[in-house]
Length: 156
Image 1: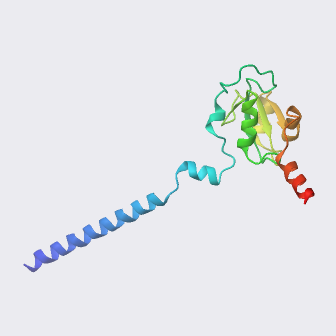
Image 2: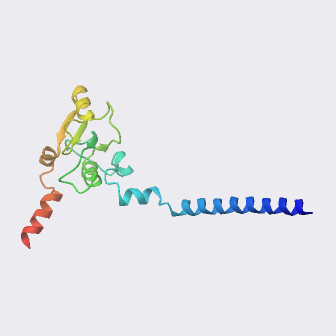
Image 3: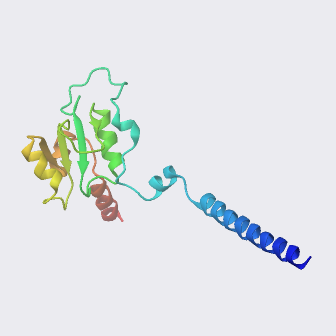
Protein backbone atom coordinates (compact mmCIF):
# COMPACT_ATOMS: atom_id res chain seq x y z
CA UNK A 1 0.00 0.00 0.00
CA UNK A 2 2.78 2.45 0.82
CA UNK A 3 4.51 1.76 -2.52
CA UNK A 4 1.32 2.64 -4.36
CA UNK A 5 0.98 5.85 -2.36
CA UNK A 6 4.59 6.89 -3.12
CA UNK A 7 4.10 6.07 -6.81
CA UNK A 8 0.95 8.22 -7.00
CA UNK A 9 2.71 11.02 -5.14
CA UNK A 10 5.68 10.95 -7.58
CA UNK A 11 3.32 10.99 -10.60
CA UNK A 12 1.42 13.90 -9.03
CA UNK A 13 4.64 15.96 -8.61
CA UNK A 14 5.79 15.18 -12.14
CA UNK A 15 2.46 16.31 -13.56
CA UNK A 16 2.50 19.41 -11.38
CA UNK A 17 5.99 20.38 -12.60
CA UNK A 18 4.93 19.73 -16.21
CA UNK A 19 1.84 21.96 -15.99
CA UNK A 20 3.69 24.74 -14.16
CA UNK A 21 6.43 24.81 -16.80
CA UNK A 22 3.81 24.84 -19.60
CA UNK A 23 1.97 27.71 -17.96
CA UNK A 24 5.18 29.79 -17.70
CA UNK A 25 5.98 29.18 -21.39
CA UNK A 26 2.50 30.28 -22.42
CA UNK A 27 2.77 33.31 -20.18
CA UNK A 28 6.07 34.30 -21.85
CA UNK A 29 4.62 33.78 -25.34
CA UNK A 30 1.65 36.03 -24.62
CA UNK A 31 3.93 38.74 -23.26
CA UNK A 32 5.93 39.01 -26.51
CA UNK A 33 5.05 41.87 -28.81
CA UNK A 34 3.88 41.23 -32.33
CA UNK A 35 6.46 41.75 -35.09
CA UNK A 36 4.59 44.78 -36.44
CA UNK A 37 4.56 46.39 -33.01
CA UNK A 38 8.30 45.85 -32.60
CA UNK A 39 9.12 47.47 -35.95
CA UNK A 40 6.79 50.42 -35.45
CA UNK A 41 8.34 51.29 -32.11
CA UNK A 42 12.03 50.52 -32.49
CA UNK A 43 13.27 49.88 -35.99
CA UNK A 44 13.44 52.99 -38.13
CA UNK A 45 15.64 51.19 -40.65
CA UNK A 46 12.86 48.89 -41.82
CA UNK A 47 11.00 50.16 -44.89
CA UNK A 48 7.27 49.53 -45.18
CA UNK A 49 6.31 46.71 -47.58
CA UNK A 50 4.04 48.87 -49.76
CA UNK A 51 7.05 50.86 -51.04
CA UNK A 52 8.59 47.67 -52.40
CA UNK A 53 5.95 47.44 -55.12
CA UNK A 54 5.40 49.91 -57.96
CA UNK A 55 3.00 52.76 -57.32
CA UNK A 56 -0.14 51.91 -59.35
CA UNK A 57 -1.65 55.37 -58.77
CA UNK A 58 0.92 57.14 -60.96
CA UNK A 59 -0.52 57.95 -64.34
CA UNK A 60 2.28 59.96 -65.91
CA UNK A 61 5.59 60.62 -64.26
CA UNK A 62 8.72 62.15 -65.75
CA UNK A 63 10.78 62.23 -62.57
CA UNK A 64 14.35 60.90 -62.49
CA UNK A 65 13.33 58.14 -60.08
CA UNK A 66 10.50 56.81 -62.29
CA UNK A 67 10.83 53.05 -62.78
CA UNK A 68 14.08 52.92 -60.76
CA UNK A 69 14.91 50.35 -58.11
CA UNK A 70 16.38 52.17 -55.13
CA UNK A 71 18.17 50.93 -52.03
CA UNK A 72 18.61 53.15 -48.96
CA UNK A 73 21.62 52.56 -46.73
CA UNK A 74 23.34 54.39 -43.88
CA UNK A 75 22.12 56.73 -41.19
CA UNK A 76 19.83 59.45 -42.52
CA UNK A 77 20.20 63.09 -41.50
CA UNK A 78 17.62 64.97 -43.57
CA UNK A 79 14.81 62.44 -43.17
CA UNK A 80 13.24 61.39 -39.88
CA UNK A 81 12.89 57.73 -40.91
CA UNK A 82 13.62 55.58 -43.95
CA UNK A 83 9.89 55.32 -44.51
CA UNK A 84 9.73 59.10 -45.04
CA UNK A 85 12.40 58.89 -47.73
CA UNK A 86 10.88 55.73 -49.21
CA UNK A 87 7.47 57.38 -49.44
CA UNK A 88 8.93 60.41 -51.22
CA UNK A 89 10.72 58.20 -53.74
CA UNK A 90 7.73 55.89 -54.18
CA UNK A 91 5.41 58.83 -54.89
CA UNK A 92 7.78 59.75 -57.72
CA UNK A 93 7.78 56.30 -59.30
CA UNK A 94 10.64 54.46 -57.58
CA UNK A 95 10.50 50.98 -56.12
CA UNK A 96 12.37 50.47 -52.84
CA UNK A 97 14.54 47.36 -52.61
CA UNK A 98 15.11 45.47 -49.37
CA UNK A 99 18.51 43.98 -50.20
CA UNK A 100 21.48 44.97 -52.28
CA UNK A 101 21.75 43.14 -55.60
CA UNK A 102 22.64 43.83 -59.22
CA UNK A 103 19.03 44.83 -60.02
CA UNK A 104 19.37 48.01 -57.94
CA UNK A 105 19.55 51.13 -60.13
CA UNK A 106 20.33 53.75 -57.47
CA UNK A 107 22.00 53.45 -54.06
CA UNK A 108 21.14 56.28 -51.68
CA UNK A 109 23.86 56.66 -49.07
CA UNK A 110 23.40 58.34 -45.71
CA UNK A 111 26.20 59.62 -43.53
CA UNK A 112 28.81 57.37 -41.87
CA UNK A 113 28.78 54.88 -44.72
CA UNK A 114 32.09 55.58 -46.47
CA UNK A 115 33.67 52.13 -46.12
CA UNK A 116 30.46 50.20 -46.70
CA UNK A 117 30.64 46.97 -48.68
CA UNK A 118 27.45 48.05 -50.46
CA UNK A 119 29.16 51.21 -51.63
CA UNK A 120 32.19 49.31 -52.92
CA UNK A 121 29.96 46.79 -54.69
CA UNK A 122 27.89 49.59 -56.22
CA UNK A 123 30.98 51.14 -57.80
CA UNK A 124 32.06 47.73 -59.04
CA UNK A 125 28.60 47.05 -60.60
CA UNK A 126 28.29 50.61 -62.03
CA UNK A 127 25.26 51.42 -59.87
CA UNK A 128 24.59 55.15 -59.44
CA UNK A 129 25.40 56.30 -55.89
CA UNK A 130 23.63 59.38 -54.55
CA UNK A 131 24.30 61.03 -51.20
CA UNK A 132 21.49 62.43 -49.14
CA UNK A 133 22.51 66.00 -50.01
CA UNK A 134 22.50 65.21 -53.75
CA UNK A 135 19.11 63.56 -53.37
CA UNK A 136 17.59 66.81 -52.11
CA UNK A 137 18.50 68.51 -55.41
CA UNK A 138 16.05 66.15 -57.15
CA UNK A 139 13.27 67.39 -54.83
CA UNK A 140 13.58 71.21 -54.64
CA UNK A 141 10.20 71.65 -52.90
CA UNK A 142 10.89 69.11 -50.16
CA UNK A 143 11.62 70.59 -46.72
CA UNK A 144 14.22 68.37 -44.99
CA UNK A 145 13.56 67.12 -41.48
CA UNK A 146 16.71 68.63 -39.92
CA UNK A 147 16.07 72.07 -41.47
CA UNK A 148 12.51 71.99 -40.12
CA UNK A 149 13.90 71.45 -36.61
CA UNK A 150 16.45 74.25 -37.02
CA UNK A 151 13.84 76.79 -38.22
CA UNK A 152 11.51 75.90 -35.33
CA UNK A 153 14.35 76.46 -32.84
CA UNK A 154 15.23 79.82 -34.38
CA UNK A 155 11.64 81.05 -34.16
CA UNK A 156 11.50 80.56 -30.38
